[in-house]
Length: 460
Image (cartoon, rainbow, N blue to C red; front, top):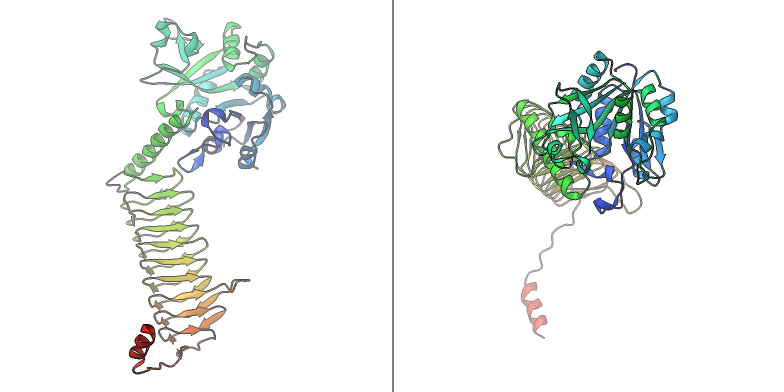
């Protein structure tokens, strides 16, 4: 945790340009809203006290922020400085701190930039430090002004810049470190623009004019300046974020032979020598071990996968898969399932809210729901744990070394003991004791000559 620091995140942007019913900062980059990216970076930077400025009806932002930060409403959208004015009480409580001002729709700000900018801010004893970067195409961005000695002299918006300034490639990211007390004083002394808005750029200009120390930290990460005001810009952000994650994983020893259709959250952890195949999506708090093969066409969310496991054409949510497991193709692992080491789940298998112990094989066309399954169990094709009677759900318990015959229906609540068998085609409604064979099917009757008689009746 960095000491004596606070942060204000400006998140009260409108919805119109996004053509959305939700606040702009709730638009997702990869799997998470932009505001969540900014919150994560702020928290990882070690800043303890955070305040988010949201719009009047931005309930989604308020719900997401929750207990992670204070939240203040900006009832009128009147510029960046006006937004910061709404948190005056928050600032007054921390006058001796440095305050970081960030935009909630610029999700690619990184922890290193925040830390290095703060270090420079304090080493130079600056009253304000602007975070800048250098881009190839500066059109649309605010330019950093420097004099002949390369000293910082202000920030100019694109619409106010002359042709010479427009050629400048160093741009402001809209992120600033201020001494909190100085920021309060600056906000108290700026005037509204002709359109009734208040800008933080005017506050910075006023500080420079009045002899306060203003500096610039230039980040090497050019992605931090990227924001989004419409869906096209969101698409660009997604692609940039997607490739940043992929390159980071490649650098960490993950094998990704083809990038097509791969989307991975930056929170995801993947071990060395694991291969990620095309059209694979990995989101949330997911951890994947070493030497795995994930994909193609797999979706994993908030789950854990052990070492040396294969998930082929698999959907897995809020579950755990052990090591040396073989899963797929066409498998769905639904929430609250635990698949132990060396388990095999074959094609068209669905597991829901169940525990499957080591060495068990569920090869094909089977549903295992609300069940506790022991070790080295073999499920025949077409087995169903019948867990729902229309009113309530019940669990099935299966012991170790059990053989479940093809097309067995296990009507819960029911238990099958260790080393037991069930005969193919059985509907098991009562417990099967250990080392027993459970048979529950009608005796076969053959009616000789029935087909001929049936066809004669059919003609009549």
